Image (spheres, protein in one colour):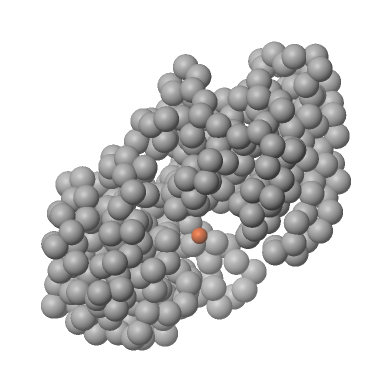
Length: 345
Ligand SMILES: [Fe+2]
């Protein structure tokens, strides 16, 4: 396997050499090459693609880019070599779907492996892993039982004690969309106003910056995606491991609808010339073996419910997910954004 390019913002193709056709997946003799356009970095995909290569002899070319893949696909049109698109977050998946860049697919295996609430109802995309929007609290200053519901963050008792990134970031917009579904627009706005009134500082920074602020005593409570806890904990940067050590991670709404989640996901490129093989790869990615590998690399929870999270992730424990269809969150994103603008989050 050869890897070209390291820069996160530059396209970096990865060529996986062909191997022998073997194993559980049968492949038409003429189609042994796939092109993946990916927002996920190569290190997350490599173990899986090596395994798929061993099973099928498929040569896989990855175009990785954190930005610009949608524009590239539109520019390429029907000449696009892309077969599979891998990305994170419902907002991105929905954007591909809205721009007509995915082809609808449905196979019994995909439907059996990925629960209905984690896939597009028309088969335009399938969730591959779950990312949980958790609450991080100061180990020293907040007791674990003090916050049970995400709704609690609007209670006046937390005045001046909460940090978040901007509301308009897709992670927070999706969280707010889940609250709109649970309680209606007016109540979700009331919650967002309460949250903003409780902020210790103007919304700023990324998710990790909120844990940093807790470690510095700027605030006691923050909202973040769960995998950042592990990324900080394992970071080579000693500051980041200190930030992780300063917090406990709480799942919210465990006695009710469950904790809000988002997904990473996959879709078949509209103009794929290798549809059958691409479908095999999608099915493989949803399979038991691939799911445990895929989720573990970025400390996520597998989308396939028969697969458990890695031992490391289970340090946080198993949790109950909000079963609200992820596609409903995408539809409510504009409503959530209007609330965010109105309350100044
Ligand atoms: Fe993230």
